[in-house]
Image: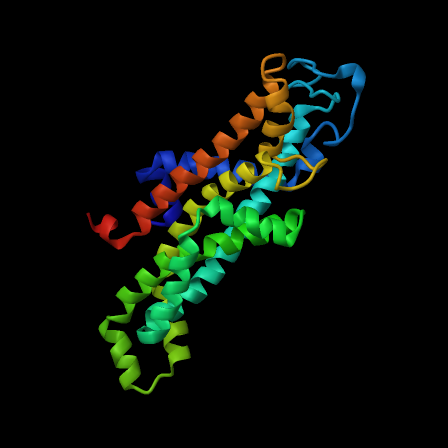
Length: 278
């Protein structure tokens, strides 16, 4: 049974999450063609219009179409979520695999660095990195990727410690295989499943953190729309007069987080050998 078929048959909620993720990715890729207007096209005559046929999600205080801005906001959330998670997985794998495989003093030194980083609140460290890197989409991706690499490394280190104790690792060493060959041929292929599960779960967390820093004013600078920025800028100011300005960005953010969470839970149940055996 393939993974896709198992996901549909055994984890229908996870399949729904996967479908929503695919839709969000398609929206992010083709937002230029799907959006009826440019995200920064203003019309003061149409300011603060409620949802209607002309503007499905209404307009903001500058008359910009909120539906178009939410579609373009998906580009920011998907780009940041996937790119930052990829950086976190690569850096976390490098730290976790090296620390777990070689052990001893190197493991002790690396884990103390990880402990020191994790001693600070994650959001605070992201804001500090953004202040150092400056505003921009690339800075947001890099800051979130670096900040999440350390918790990722803990998960990958644990999986590496389990694989390191297997008999085939000792057999490879006895056969004269180099450390690099053992890592590439034996260790990494056996920890792919935990990495995939961890990455799928962390995407939703990264999207949420990006929305949080955008809400606080440290995210992608305007006029580029982000869901967190829309909640902060116009959503708070016009929450009573124009509630659609906060409702629809919040709904989009909730839907994305829900989709990645249920997909990650389903992949964990299908790929984790202990849960699969149960």
